[in-house]
Image (cartoon, rainbow, N blue to C red; front, side, top):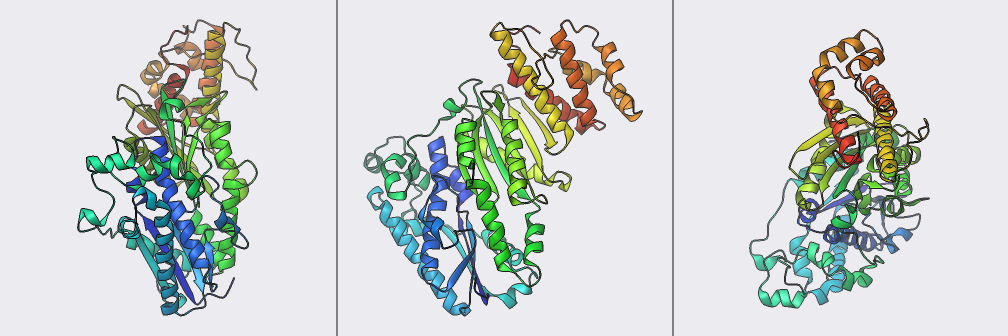
Amino acid sequence: MRVPKTYLALTVGPIYGTIQSAKKVRELFGASYFFSWFMRHLLIELRQSGNIDIAVPYIGESGELLGTSHNIGFFHDRFVAVSSLSVDEARNQLKKAQEKALQTCAEKLRTNGVDTEALKAYLVMHPLVIEKEELAKIDKNPLIAIDKLLDAKELHYPFAPTPSKTFVYTCTPEEKDKFGAEEITDLSPVNLFGYKIHTIKREIGLKIESFRSTHDLAYESGYFVVVTADGDKMGAKIRELMGEGGNVENIRSLSKNLYRFFFENTNIRALTNDAYGGELIFAGGDDILALLPVRHGSKTFLDYLDELSKRFKAVVGDEVSLSFGVNIVYYKYPMKNAISEAFTLLKEAKDWGKRPNIAKIQLVKHSGQKYDTLHALSEPAFATLDTLVKGTLAHKDRTRQKQPCEHTDESPCFALPHAVHHTLDLYKGAIVKTLEDGRSLEPFFEKIFDDARTDAQKRGLRYLQNHIEALRPVTKEDFYHLFGDLNIVKFLRGDRDDLPA
């Protein structure tokens, strides 16, 4: 990679606003894929100039990744490149690349009623071309400085002065007929790449035959899961790798590891779609957006979080991690709300005590009731919660199949009394005192749960005891999370369905 004199960067949107327009899974995927697709074409044009090197995202050793879509959006909304050109020369190259990418993408969409001007009016692009010395005035690390500048640029959102200048507007009946769908209300990428995705997928390189609907994802429980993820301590990692001198090659190496995390070995799309029966919407940089059933075979969404978390550390580095926002909703829940709340949960997870590797999980019942909990995936309480889930699900399955509940430590099978959380709520003070004194909860549990009627329930209470001792609740917030855990366990096992206690 050439010695940088000038840095080039660009952020494109409006991604968040566009995906929030989606009402169906295929529209959500299409809206997300659209921006990755455009960014890929922009990088192709930029690289063809011959005197600009792409630092982020990773495009392969010789740019070969620009020739594939991976059937998923993985080129994120920003790029960073370096050049030995002057600022004026580099700015001219970037402008030409933008215009050419707009023309190329509009040409592929022309049969769907989109021209270059319409596409240009919809997309919000913030380019940045700056000398290395100028970046140093903002931050010693060039990449951190670029992120600060692009973040500031994204706060400015221009609007087209008239509806005719953009293709986000209400269709006339004639236009609806033209697009072949009476229910289409606008011509945004959501609809172009959602409703029409099967007719234009060949032009844009997609090989996906179909998408699971929210009803498909919720086939067993009536609920599906929105999972969002983002990397922790990535800024510190970038500072360490680049140093004050701005070693761009090291950043390219980090970007390569992020690519490996998503696409090497069992890639994340195969993991999400095949192993967990879900739909991966976006996978790029250190970000993930996926939809899952709450349970797929013997696996639950908790296994998915754990698997992604361990893989991220193994591939990208032990000093970094993933945090998650997880929203469990009824299949008729508005997609916009489901996605928006998941991103809010992710932000709350990352802000919680400024600790890494956190998952904040929310359950929105059909009745409107909401429960949530929060866990550090690397701490014992997450593992004991997973055991509570697996044990109660095994009991549910075997009871329905009229099979004995064969229990081992490796394959737990147990039950929990229905009103266990009410009893725990009543004795919160005693629980805190017992834990603060360093005593086991076992004698206390034997006394307050002396009405446990079956061996399966008695085993379940022992595992619940283990979970509480791992969680060590002290504050009101701690108990709120404990009861959130229990509500999620009850929800997964079927709450008050036809199972015996």
